[in-house]
Structure formats: structure tokens, C-alpha cells
Length: 604
Ligand SMILES: [Zn+2]
Image (cartoon, rainbow, N blue to C red):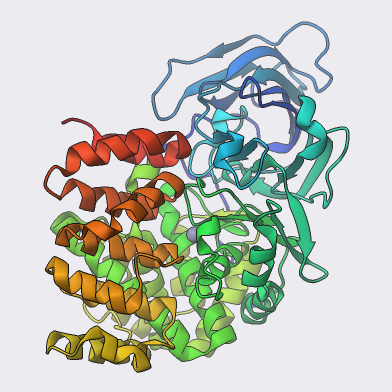
């Protein structure tokens, strides 16, 4: 251990939470899952870290919850504890204020969710790969409060256990899973019990219920998926245990017991969500050739950056995501070599430059200022890619051995704690950098300046340079069909770079020739389709229309949808067409996606 004193962990004020009062150590959740009424109903019992003496009130976050009864004990007996719900705020919800008699050790709240609960997506059988309904939660950033009353701030952690009962005739067919120790088989009576003994923040609470099977991949990894999806998924993620081993070699032991993946129906709004013990992933990354698994490396890396050391508030989101992107690419380098990781870095930097260009001089700094906004609207590539570039800059400055030792120590020292940007900056300058290195780095410009500081490294990739050479030959008139001998070995990343490198507007005939040679419209790779459709739309290339509409109606991943709807809006008559497709597709999207798309597609 170095002689440096660790900064004292203190609670950073969170602009997105009403939570106040005594620290809560443990949650006992008891919920019935009612598909017919699209509600969860039951109770949340919170055990205080120490019986209340200095606090006379506990304040929790809620949004759209029906609070039925509140007691200042765990048993839910005796007279109710006085409580009030505050004025509703569209984003933050309502503060639930509970009076605490002296010596209160636990608080029990009987409640139910609303069918509109923003975290919950209730899928009809037709929206799954099978014949049963499905439920999943998405709690990040501040949606946990829509399915349980909680201190919904990333700076507040607690362990939890939960009893979940599935109601209805189909209960014996449905498996329930949480971000916890999970069952591997369906219970005939529809009753499940879960434990998460490591303290986690509320945004990492997760529940999924559906017709799901399990396939083990190793003693500590495995896949849950709908039966129709499971064989493809076990093939796609066959390297999962190697990934965990690579991550551990880099930055220390995996601290969460099992690492399993849950492959969700395609309306899941994100690529993945790092729910502890059980990463949720979109089925869109089942490309058949393991070419999109860096997304899993990303979610796995969150088991350290994010889940172990957690951003104190959403303003410090880059501490979760910047570290995770850097760590993800180091895992991919470990597994597939430097040339592969270099492609990921070049593509990531291209995303960042694109975002910075779009936002112009108003581009956000790495440290965000989200007070008064929905944090979900303020999170973009900057936290991910500029955060990662800061770590790469450190790598160039001090060398990998020193940086890796620092990161390993950082994860170990601050495990199960939260971290804010100022505390990180002072720890970095104490524990890693010499005064000369600190002066050279110019940390204030990295954290609080717009754009990129001068001296930010730029990645290069020999494989993507090969793609550039192909693009140059196309530009000088080589027919696409004559380039097969080069492109036949290309990965998803090379194709992505290729599609992005084409002129943004091409005549329909040129797009048709590309499609005839490379079969983009018929691709099963969601990332490639998402890069291809805008080109087809701008060219007015009608043969891609049906595939585009099919994509928009079946994929729920916001990151892919938003650019496609934007491209559609940019075509002649595009608004009416986009609105027509959106109307059909919207029931398949999670609130996280409709929150963004409703605004984009409003008006006429
Ligand atoms: Zn992430």
C-alpha cells in the first residue's frame, strides 16, 4: 500500500434524488408479478444501517407508485408511520417522507406500480421469440423509483433480497431473474427467492420474467435466453469465461460470484445493461460470427468500473463509462490482439469527433451538469469516448505498467464506494502523477473544457487503413464486385468503417451496385444495417425500404433507432412516413427509447 491517505468517502449532493435521512443497509423486497394488470405489487422493507437517533425522517424517491401503507417496523404491524408524498416532478417523481420514531430499525412500505411505470416493459407474446409474455426492468439512470420506493441515487448502496411470485396460469412456465444470485431452472409454483449480498446502488436493481432457459458455459458463466434464441446465443458468447479471465488478469478479481448473460427480446432499449451477476443484452449483437461481442466486454468491465467503484452522481457518469470503454478495449486486445482493439478505438474516436462536431462549441465537458434535466437526455459519447481518451492519454504519459497498477489499486481501494470527479482528480494527482506529469496533462481542460484538449492521442488502425484503400479504389471507378477478394475476410468493424467512409450522398445506381456486390440490405448484422439504411435513404434506394421498416418495427435499441429516424425525416415526405412507421413500432419500444423518439417525431 502507498502511504497516501484515501479521500474520505462522503455523500455528494445528488441533483436527481430526494433521498435523505439515515443510511439504509438492506432491502427486503416482496413482489407479485401480475401480467394481466401490468403491475408489480407487494412491499419494500428497508433496514437502517443503525437504529435512527439523529434522524426523525426518512425521504425516499418514488415516481408513479401507489403507496398503500407505511410502517416504522419490518413486520408491517401496529399503527402506520405518518408519511406524505411531495409535489410530483415529471422527471424526478415524488419524495416520500416518512416520520421515524426514535429507535426505528426498519421501515416497511406496501405499494404497487403503475402500468405506465417507466422502468418496466411488459411485452405481449408477439413481441418475444416465443409464446409467453415477458417483463424486464431498466433502472438506469433514475427509473428504479418507478418500481420501488428507494434512495435512487448512485451514491447510496445497499444489499438486497427479494421474494418474487409470478401470478396467473402461465406461472409454471416463466422464470424470474434478478441482478443477484439466480435460479437456473423454472419453478413450477412461480415462486423465486433472490439474494444480492454485495451493496449496490438502486440503478443496478433489475428483474426479468419470461419463458427462459439456461445454458452453462463454464462453472461461473452461462446464458439465459428464450428457447428459440439460446443455441445462437451460446455460440455467440462462447468466449465469455475467457473474457472474465482476461478482465481479472488486467484489474483484479471478479467480485460478484457468477457472471451470466440474459439475452432479452429485441425491444430492449440499450445494447447492454451491466446488472450485477446478470448482464442484460440485446439480441441484436447475435451476428453469428462473434463480431459484436465487445459489447459484452463492455458490460463485464462495468463489474469493476461502475458496479464496484460507482459514479457518485450522473454528473460523474464519465467515471463509469470512460473507464469501462478503456477497460473493454483492453479486454478485447487481450483476447483478439492489438490490431482488433485498434479498430475499436478508431471507430470510437470517429463517434466522438462526430458528436463534438454536431454539438459544436457548446459541446459538454467530460464532467456533466445535469441538474434540472433528465440525466438520460444528457448522456452521450463524450462521457464514454472522451473519458476513454483521458485514460489513453494517461497511458501515453506514464506507460501501461504504472497506469495498470494505478487502476488495479483504484478498484481495490474504492470497491463498493462511490467516486466523484473532484475526488478522482485529487486521487489521480496524488497516487499516479508526478507534478511535472500533472502539469503536462492539464486535467482541468480534460474534465471541464469543451472539445478535446490539444495533445489528445489519435489512434490508427492498419486494418482500417486497408478499408480506406478499398474506398479510394471505389472512388476512382473500380466496380465493387472486383473487390470481393479483399472484403471477404472483413469483420463487422471493417464494414462499419467502410459504410461510414462512403460519400454521404450517392446516386441510387451506385447504392444498388454496392448492395448487389455486398448484400447489405440482406445482412443479419444490426450494426451494419443501421449504418447502411441512412445511405439507402439519402439515395432514394427503394429496395431497402421493406428491410428498413422491418428493422424499425423489431429493434428497440435507441442508439440504432435515433439516427435512422433522423435519416428518414431528412428524406422528401419523410416525416409522414416516419410517423406512420413509428406509430406501428412504438408499442415495441421501451420508455427510454420513446422518451427520445416522441420528441424527435412530434409535430408535422
Ligand atoms: Zn457502459
